[in-house]
Image 1 (tube, helix red, strand yellow):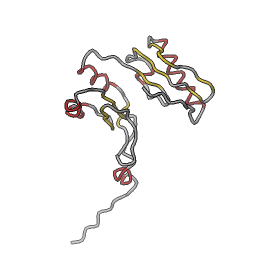
Image 2 (tube, rainbow, N blue to C red):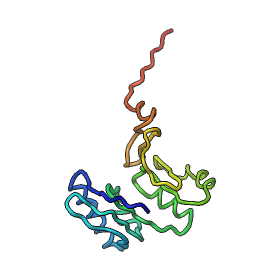
Image 3 (cartoon, one colour):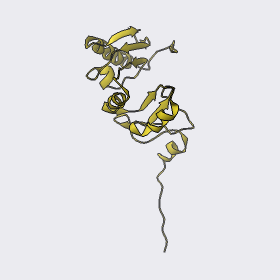
Image 4 (cartoon, rainbow, N blue to C red):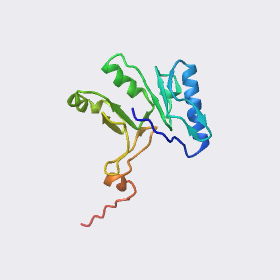
Length: 156
């Protein structure tokens, strides 16, 4: 795993919110595997293990350098857990069976479905979430069209 060296958030309150999510998740049973420290607007890259529904690291959007590892019993359970979220920016699936992962993309309602890659934006592709993670798309032609009010002119 590549760890980002600089984790300064734009506002101290964002770092404070992330720290609260980390601390509360650990209190509820998550394992702090890496990081977890904050200094002003800097929040150390953090990895939590054994994250479960009911913990802020599962139930809330986290904005900052936090990876929440969630155990699934099997493949079906993994998709159920993914769809439990009220947020829907993106899902990463790590697998050696690419063909199967591609065939299962429609099982996730999120705005992005990445296979063997972290969810990230690319200006060539439309990007945006579903549910409480946003409405519409940004970037690419699709994103530009979000800012256009197309008009129909009909003449008989």
